[in-house]
Length: 521
Image (cartoon, rainbow, N blue to C red; front, side, top):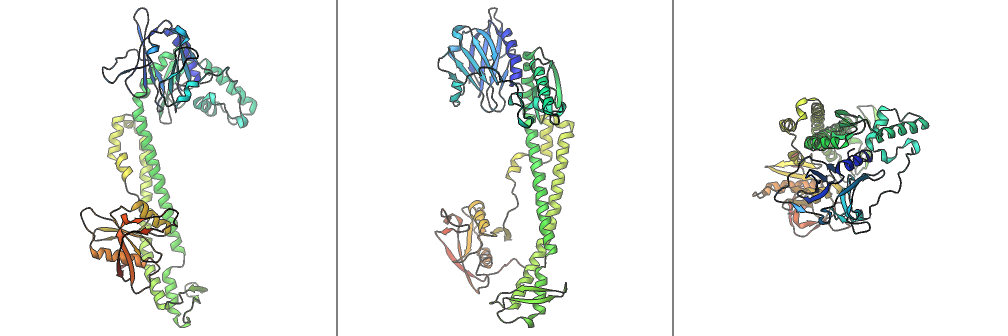
């Protein structure tokens, strides 16, 4: 709230009293987004104005002393030098502070908007404006409002923007604003406005992970300062906020990191649990295979389906068949799928347990982050982060679970797409240009990728096994032999406007394999 209108209107007359008669002796910048104005009076007393005009923390600081660096220092606004301060004003209901000078009624305006702060110097009324941030060209036309807008409560009790976030939050949390009737809401807002215009105290508070200057007590009150000294409050607040900023930034990042980790782990455990429940309650592959084998005598040649009595439930069921495939072969495939399903169930059980543990650990770390006193200092926080392997760099690079079928063969990873969209994801996003790419020739099927290993050519047995997978997960699954395209991924491209999964291969070699899953043992 150090840039809010209600604080600036207290600061402006205090600065006028303090600066009247001071003339500008220097104006320069020695860091990005920083403007320093040095002022002297007739006795040689100095006063410094340091404007921080970065979007992260716009502020006016009033350091008692300042030592200009010998290097990396640039003089700015030469026409401002030698001018004498006449008065300081806050624009009506705006986050703008204006310094007016005796000579030619020149003005130096500090626009303290959070996203786009700036300084605008005008040597005389009507003269072209000189901007500190040239990229905000429209600031040259910035003018104050003609008159303050009366405080009006909007529909559904909506508070006007001029009250800003802290006073509005104070009204809701400590004055019972939301449940109050309309007339009482207007009264509460008007009473608070009177307090803001003549505050008894300024408060340095810690709220939502940030140190802030407030005209109302909210959150954790770190210091209470007299409302008669806004200059002193600003001098106390800005250095303190800057000193705590690195700590608060890292705490916010850690909180976001742990919250995201807990949410992702909980979601993953929930989805795996749902899949596990579905597998446990649906008629499995083994049951259908048992029913086919038990009723071979009742299945007509080339039948597309057969109705039998399920001896598990004593209910009639219809089992779909492939007319061009013998029932024994269908049952064999179903038994193999049943075995894979058992493997999937074990993997899902492990995943649920692991993800629930991960979510619990993240929640425990969040609680520790809030309650451990040693984490209130930057050094302690960084040591704790390192202890729990929460450094942002490795976490950002940590590999997530791959959304593909994954096989390992002689140290090489083989990835298989699950559907057309998943094929695009594998080929376009995950595959490296030096990976080997495989696909059953001239039919639809899964994209298969063999991850390359630096300095190690892919052995032919690994290529053959990956080709078998490409044939197995394609329309040629039941062919006796399947031709499979093999090429480095860099020769595979996706034409603009093509359907999901469709690609063009520029160079290829073809291998013939028997479709199958060589890893299904």
